[in-house]
Length: 240
Image (cartoon, rainbow, N blue to C red; front, side):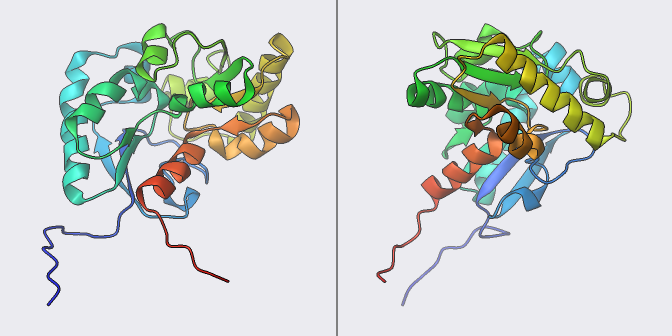
């Protein structure tokens, strides 16, 4: 007789997401829109930790609710844990050490890979270049890699909704225009950039248009999550 020990309330969840508290739209491509990925996800909301708070005033006090949420995901039986904001890179090491499963809370973890693949400077399109620091880069092991950063802090629609949390409603067409303009500025400043990593989880919905415009490989959290899903849940090969 085969005996399955059980012990999980819900089974078959691939990736767990540590989710900042936010209420603006999450179009397909956003990690907090489950339709963005072709596998199962579940979410732990980090109540009280918003985008402005994480970006502008991160503190060690945030670690307690973040680690508690990560342990809850681990206990649920998810196979790996990610996050809903690339600035969680500050806590990548601590979260990974707190659980028994792989952790990839920031798309910036792909910066070293992008550099090794192209041997050219890596462009980083971020919500705010002003607050992306060496601590974030060190948190994902990307120190010493040539990086060109372009932020969206000087935009109107993106910054007012996402960075300043002034309202929940958002003009997604205008955000797309602002994101594409930021991508063009990045390449104008550094035409030798070989690949681009989208730090912000609000940017993958526009990755297709960015790539069509900039003609570069585009990495983001959905590409990393897809790879991690395939790593932690290998499928059998079948003969033809």
